[in-house]
Length: 396
Image: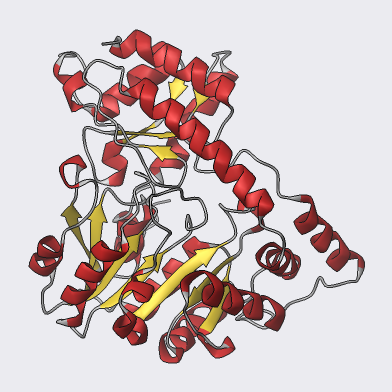
């Protein structure tokens, strides 16, 4: 039977990170020893006080639907967090709790984009941004920001990308896949451009905010440029910083009109986020953050080791990051010495088949000639993987 699928769904691609995970699983099933550096998921367990809060909620029967936009206790915890960490003031009616930060971003795109509207996305980008724009019948406008600019879009690039059809700018700092953070001064400069174009909304994906170790504290673009408050959507969640990926809680903070539009989208798709997970997220945001600081210290130790090892490789160049748990080495020099490997996709396949290391080619993030490695795994696994990668790259 020949089923006609929508043009919308045929325009998008499967998630490349999930494809890599699936390919690695296939090789493991065949008996191969594969070290996976593809997943963007902390390898730590959810902290005990968060799990205990969820258990208590279950025991007390808090297992029914909640209101669509989130329980008041969680909203208040989010408001307090945004005030404490970013000096941003919001009310309950401006907060929407969703099924992960990814869901929050999709809600924002659905609420803001009409057919043909343009969304500016700096590359390298998280793999889902362009395809989510396409699902909303929008047009992704990719701005290339490679290693030469420190993986950051410049104000001149932003200005050049804006057209009368531009509806939003997508920002992610600290970044997946590069781990770089915009400084306050850099965000202020981007904000000055946006202030000249009042029809452009900025969507700030801050999911890696607490996993950062730069020379200056994390800064949100709305904190850096308060005049953008009325046309900004701040996205965050508990998945990464609290090792709660499976709990699926994200949230957004935005002007009331945008939040109401996003709430309508969510009300006709998923409805509320999981009740028990909302209680757990409240405990995460309100609880002692020493557990987060301990995880970040380990991520920083791994980062230092991985970056140093990668930079030993022939034709490999890796910038240090300021957050998240990814390294994004430039392997274009290595490819020049491998005439039988056509591109970063082919190199990722060689590393998987010949070295038993699964990682994601940079093309998936809009950056051909790079690779993304996740160091959200043990030092033992990282050492094994990098030793194996040395057999492919050689050591300078």
